Each structure stands twice: as structure tokens, then as C-alpha cells.
Amino acid sequence: MIYVLLCLFAVMGLIQVIKPQLLWKANRPLQRPFVRDYDATEPTKAGYTMTRIVGVIFLGMVAFMIITHAT
Image (tube, rainbow, N blue to C red; front, side, top):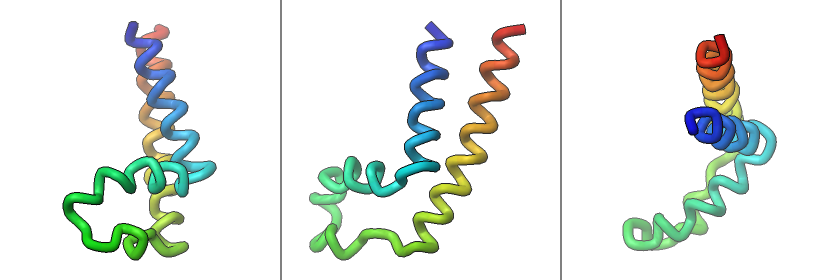
């Protein structure tokens, strides 16, 4: 069961690195009660770059967890 969860984390990390716009679009409806114009809150290029950097770190942590559980 832990491997399924880690694989889901790995897929989320890959999406975060490859196409972070998908994560923003998926979270847009969750902003509706808190933000007046949630279309105006889309991140800039720098914001997406930061998301990609965090995604790479997240993938490294997931890879470490998979290797640790495999041994």
C-alpha cells in the first residue's frame, strides 16, 4: 500500500515539474470562496519556476523514500 501512495506522490511531483499550470487549474475552484477574481491570481513565470524547483526537491524526497522502503 505504501508503494501505491509513493507512486501517486511521484506522479504529482512529475506534473509539478513538467506542467505546473495543471496544478494551478486544478486548485482554482478551491480559491473561489476566498478570492474575488481567481483568474487574476495566476502565478508569473517566476512563480511557476519556483513551483518546478519545489517539485524537483519533492521528487528527490519521494525517490529517497522509495529506495529506503525497497531495501
